[in-house]
Amino acid sequence: MLARAAEFASPGEARIALELLPEFESLTAFEENAPTFAENAIGKALHYSRFCRGLVFADDSGLVVPSLGGIPGVLSARYAGPGASSAERNAKLLGALRGKHGGERAAHFVCAIALAQRGQAKAIVTACVDGEILEAPRGERGFGYDPVFYVSALGKGFAEISAQEKNEYSHRGRAFRKLLAFLSCDTLTGQS
Image 1 (cartoon, rainbow, N blue to C red):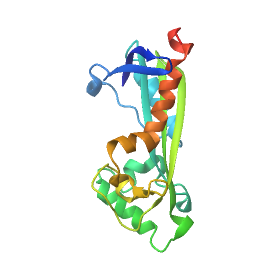
Image 2 (image 1 turned 120 degrees about the horizontal axis):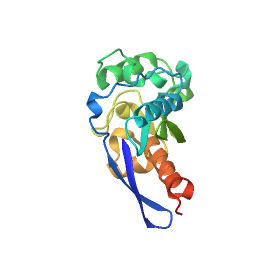
Image 3 (image 1 turned 135 degrees about the horizontal axis):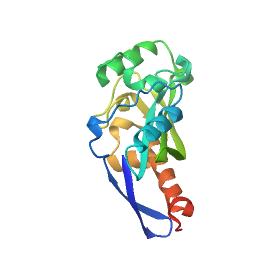
Image 4 (image 1 turned 60 degrees about the vertical axis):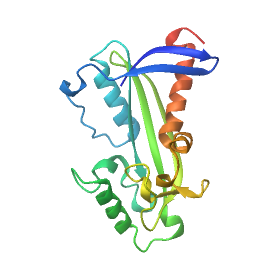
């Protein structure tokens, strides 16, 4: 993503115009093989920032289940193998957690967003949301692991909440708000 034209609607509230990198599909892909979400995010941001002049942000995110040694982790999208569907990934996860109860089903979503410009890192922000893995998928909204992720503070799973609630509570929403706060500072724009 290329972030352009940071505009400030009111103090502390940034509005950013976003656009895809020109000819993104023809660019050499970045191979995500780092051991952490932050390293994958900054690697992507640095890689793609070499193809334009503006600010580029990239993210890496996924689900971490401590009782399973942190998996799916950075392999969240590939947990059930290349090309596996969300339903297949969820089924594999539920199978791995079969027989586990209470705290053994604790999990958290993580999102790291990195910002770069012309091959130089400008920021890395991270956020997470704590929850637990349900016994079976629930809800019709969301994507990925949302149908099996339950947030006790909401009393609902991620696939059961509205888009507005998801933006408020999700790891991506939280990380993006941190990035907007960073962009609101005079660090890059000379404004505050």
